[in-house]
Length: 453
Image (cartoon, rainbow, N blue to C red; front, side, top):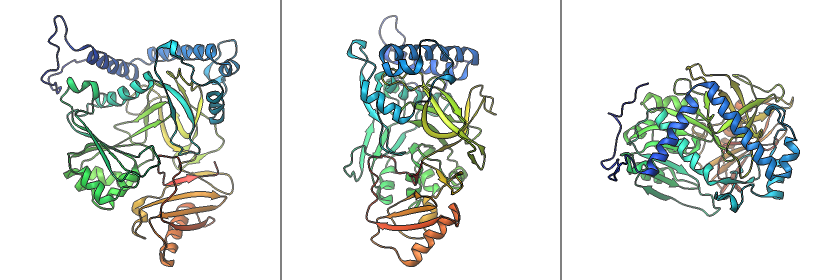
């Protein structure tokens, strides 16, 4: 192992001026945490699995001690994780409603109430500790260290407001997106652009005002911007990488960015537990599981197949969930779990990740298949602000076209043809023009949602 910091972008005042001190304590703690995370996730597999087993025992002991709900589920004896019952969203609601957080003031750990985005139905309340929030920040930054990314570049994030009020365009800048490490590293600027219904020209004008660097966004935002500018404009504006979350970016769009030297990296996470996996640098579509945070199982969910093969439901055990335990939690997604990655990473790897209620279409025979419709396929048909496709009944799709009072017969027919080309001729398609789409409590604007699952 080589340890050489000759190319590291140290800040001028990176090291402490205090006697017998190398770095400021808060920087030392943060760097130590990043080293720990990297050691866990890339080091010896047996050592990692031994650590996970110990953390699991700690969580289960805490849950059984603090919660009648969990005592009933865990039982008096230690059993294998796979023998514990699956935790559903309804189970989670019952535990939180009846018992609240399992950390109290006497634990001297700050606890916050949180909720899911509502993208898969009604938002679910739960509690997280301050440690969970700190871990999420550290794990995100650790990925930049693990891949050797340039820390001096800016990081720009597109976000939706969590409140129902309309936000036209709000911009927040920070001196460094590296947080505490900003005093240690000459890191780039952090910039967050918040908007519920962004207008492409205004959004691009704000994004290109500063070098973009790493662009963290949903695929819908990227496709919205592509209505106004091409990938070459992103490159000219200093975009180094697309860091995509929520849905998958269309393979064709991804290839267009790759052609101008902008790679794409997807992340897999959820509100309940935080990071689940990071996309492999060498094998797109495969995610190295964040083993410092979760244990992932994939349980059989019947004969569910997609083009790439058979998938099962994803069960998550959060190793740091002391405020609200998540043990074998059915997050509602489907995936394939493999022992390791073809790149050589010796750790569990997920592939074929799809959301059961986000990206799967249910056919009359009960089979499920992936369903994708991209903005760049819709915009040649008509001008609009936003769109949403929902499976609202067996063999029926409802398409909402936002920002329009009406649609011509030709436009409607073209939308119907596009939907049938993706879903099949046996689906009836209803196309509705609406002034604005009612996204409800969800902060995620998913292009497709199955309301039957």
